[in-house]
Length: 146
Length: 146
Image (tube, chains in turn green, red):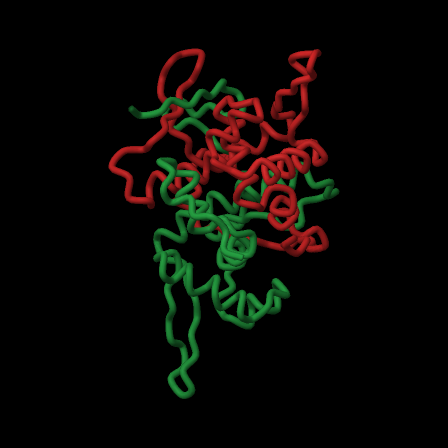
């Protein structure tokens, strides 16, 4: 069942969901964020049907979110790596993770984020770039551009 | 077609997606974030089938993300409002919006965020709470808790 396309909505959320709105796709993005690169890694991690996984990876490549890299020539074998566009999506994965950490009833977050250069834990928070104020402390209103 | 449940995965992203992973649900969350509260508002905004919308709203209420408030007694009419758990999800909607703003080929973001108290624009950025460094400037690694 192909879901509706949201590409016609003049809305960045809808456009984003048109690319990655499927829950399996979001879990593949999570796995890429966690450093998985190979078909079998996604397959084992997610328990996803192979044809479904192939379809999701092909979409991500077609959308420029992921690139395919050959890591073995005979027989040809490929890895999947986030592009710049794909790495920019990590903020969404982190936001989902944080919400799940807080509201899913876990005693402790299943996964922690670490700064790979310093080894220190990272506690992600969404702030206003200009003032540094967390968005949860602001009354945020949306205004259409036109 | 009911998709697989991700509730068994020991992962906050999967748990979050089990609640809100459906793209229609994410668009309903977007509309709630933008201040829509009534069934007809969602219906008109999304062009979603009424039974699909009813099903998504019922799930959000059952999950404690949205609460139903009667605003008219005869005949009974209800509005839908984000709970604390639902408002905490705004970070995900904002992250999706920002990614769509940057990577969907819009000349200008369709929607801007405003601080309702000061009237000033808000530019959301994900930073490490301890250091204030944007996460895009860090090499973020994930570590399982166990």
